[in-house]
Length: 497
Image (cartoon, rainbow, N blue to C red; front, top):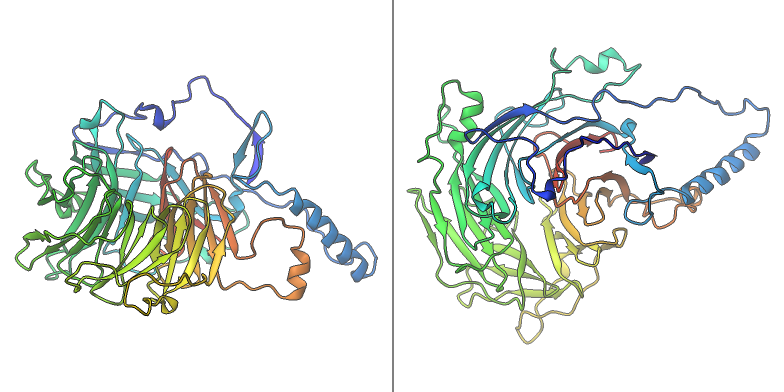
């Protein structure tokens, strides 16, 4: 991040948290341009100094350069640690981004999820297209304006850079520099969304797309399941309409009895759909979609946490296993086949609330957690064993990695979908950080970075975003991250991942 004087406009819109809409929704559908303040900006170096041009021995010159670099590093501005001087604001170093776009929503969205599409995997050409869903948090007294937003983000171009080799753009589309566009279809809700997650059933035939389901955990305590397949078809199939009947939930979970919660996850190994939901009373319910499309929720909850269930995730490799994180500071591992509905293993991973967890899809014995004290850690589940007397409580093993870089609560943590060493972390200090756990410094590199205070070598990138709440890697566009916060959404890709 770089710093620049603040520019204040008399007609600047109020922040989203004030409850003012940046644009007015019409008939539940939205279409508009991104508010892309970074478009077509870039930075470049005008001068290049070559080694040895001053006539001094290389050793003397390199020693001086290292000393100067350390002085600069010690003064590096770190978001969340350092305060801006009066009249200053943060501006991104655009030379570090391959792509960056921002957009506003009618209301803040604390949770969203990315929808897989049929445009192909491992996409690297531009402009990019992203499909997603999000749930809104309308102001008190205006709860009836809440909605599930089914979104298509298109025309996402990469940064315009001078001097770039044209051969690098051979694979890009002719309209690479098209203006970014946001299209939405709205599903009305009567309550704020705490968490939303997507599940797609297998494609039935070439002509019939997969069924796409959303599970929305509401502030009212209900969990609503919608079939958004027709909403997605609206964007790309001419003539498609979505009736009010199609916008009604296909199933509503009322087992939480008006107790709100934040934990929702679909099983990646259950094709028809199996859902976990957890609430502030510490109860976890399982809901299964049967082959005929109907749903059933187990009447007996999984119990074991002494406080609210903050996060749930199914194992990526074992169909009957899931993990839960709680404000009681523990992470528990469960087997749904247990008739007692009790955890198999329980580990105290923090003295504060454990807000989020993420299970690595590449190395399934690795689990990442994020807590209220700002620490996030990686655990080897092979070290988690039940105690000798058969109870779920185990001695607390040490994490394989732990980081205290963030000084505010961790709000999101997610492993890279194809690289088991890369992790994205969001925190209450208005930063979204990318980490590479495979980084190890040799002796020479350690000397060169000795002056960088409180910055672990595994830290790859810091992205500033006001009130960032949740971040997800795009599973089909390598290195692309989408995030949501109090000021709207951001989609970006760095040159470092």
